[in-house]
Amino acid sequence: MPELPEVEVCRLGITPHIIAQNVAQVIIRNSQLRWPIPEEVRSVIGLPVLKVDRRAKYLLIRFSTGTLLLHLGMSGTIRVIEQDTPVAKHDHFDLVFQHGKVLRLNDSRRFGAVLWLANDVDEQGLLTKLGPEPLSDDFAHGYLFSKAKNRKVPIKTFLMNNHIVVGVGNIYANEALFQAGILPTAKAGDIMEQRLNKLTDIIKLVLSAAIAQGGTTLKDFTQADGRPGYFEQSLMVYGRAGLPCINCQTKLDEIRQANRSSVFCPNCQKD
Ligand SMILES: [Zn+2]
Image (cartoon, rainbow, N blue to C red; front, side, top):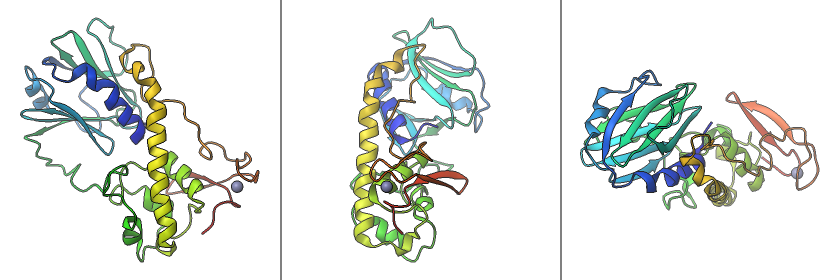
């Protein structure tokens, strides 16, 4: 599943190819994504792209009349390719530009989304209820501690709650808790402020490192046979259950939390 770093790298990868370019055509091959693709997305025809932003895992393509919102769901990829590139299975949506390139969404599981926010009005409230961006100054020391007060929920579930902070998905929650030395099962409200501040710093480092690593794949966003959005990463715990901890050689343990895999070192990580 694409997580925040993949979506940010996607944004960086597609922006230079579509910024200030005029849309010539909108092609909807299958409108049945997570929500039906609204016909209003065709209102961008003739308009130039003003900016490409990201909020949480939403890509926001800004036009003078509103915002085209894209979400990659579980399996989505976006590429900018030549107009004559043959259409593949699961290529559901194209934005065709006047300069001959196409922004193409492929999504085999169709949990992704293409929506239109006319005049940037967010009727579904998709963006308004989100917590701060983890790489912004709003996610600072003291923030997690204030939000965690009296909360009995496990810290890992707490971190993955988009109302607390966006974009800390399963992989990065596992990695950050390992590096911060905090057990994923520790109760959020019981953790000292100093440790939550350290966790805040580590979340920023882990996500920044993943974005930097993904930067090497930027060219994949313009290759028809590329696999944009799923870059190789060096992970310390995620996907390494049963293998030795890189710090202390203790066998890494695995449990299920909120139906997701949590991998941790029972020696290095504490309540
Ligand atoms: Zn260890």
